Image 1 (tube, helix red, strand yellow):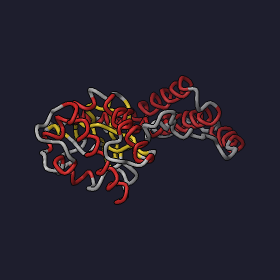
Image 2 (cartoon, rainbow, N blue to C red):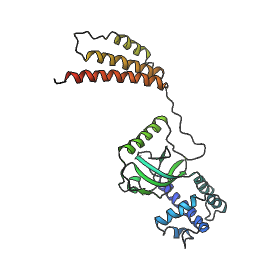
Image 3 (cartoon, rainbow, N blue to C red):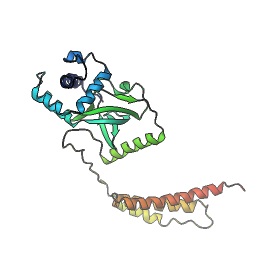
Image 4 (cartoon, one colour):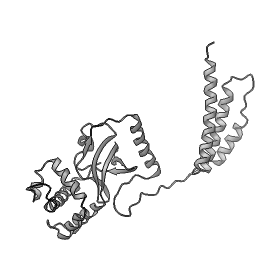
Length: 273
């Protein structure tokens, strides 16, 4: 997802103004004193100036106080929020319809593109893409500052799997950060079991308790019945104690042991002497 055209135009009005002001104080780029001149410098120069600015964020306060470009109060409020920037290296794990997933310092951010979709900005870099950038708050959302420094690194399954797991855990726990505004908190996940499964589960469990394989039955029948009972036990704990990870883990381990017994029976059924 990208900013609306109006919001993108607003960002590209505010950021050059701030950077131009910063250069007047920091003297990073010679001959840069106006916004029009900022539009002519290279991305490498913009990155150099950007990095210098965020090492001295007090310049943002000075920009707000002086308001050298006559910005409105709402526009100044947006720039003021940029003091809550997050700079560093990030993995871009995936691009969703709602936002792109940036992962850095074991935190997961939902980030909007600016004008061009990030797929185009990344120019075919494989995911997870490893980049250096600055994340900024913008009208309750998170954007990047328009400058992405990509690392030409291909990651194997280990790193890719780790990033994927980090995203999946953040999604499941409702911990994807979607705003850098002070005091923002993710919407609390409301977890509840809407249907009373206990009567049906008790009924099925009682019937399953009668499953018993005899000596003359196929060998696979015993572990198959045991797996049914272990699965029902796991389901019961999932319903009654879904927050008890230890109890769930214990029941899951029992299922796995039963499954391995079934696998052994299948293996020895095909064993060649």
